[in-house]
Amino acid sequence: MTSPPIPLRAWYLVGGRLPLKYREWVFHQATKRTWLAWFVVRAFLQVLPLTVVIALALVWGLDSPLPLAVACGSLGLVVGVYFAVSYAIESTDHRMTKYGYPRASASTFRKARNTESDQERERRYNEAWRSGE
Image (cartoon, rainbow, N blue to C red; front, top):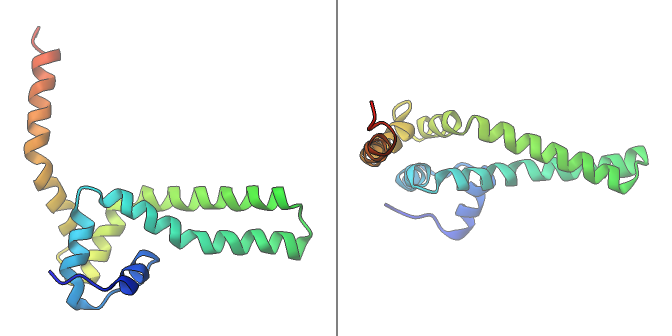
């Protein structure tokens, strides 16, 4: 797996697309255990510039009080990140198709990796809570 240099990683983090030679690295990023945290960071960095522009437009264009503009911008940031996280699985799978992977490959890989630990967790739950049946 070829890792991209730091400037390209930063570009990817703010929503840019990497060359196809880094497709294995992108797949690894989309399937590692902390993928959702990195997805949230990526979504935050993508929504942040628009939030700043809206807050500045409210202050300079509409003469809005600064606290109101910051509150509106913050609300926009929260809603934008919430919306992005709501579709994290689908968005990540779609990104993987852009790098040549089959549809739903990232979510399938994560599900297969977690199957064994999920079964163990279910067994322990059943032993603790379903033993009386």
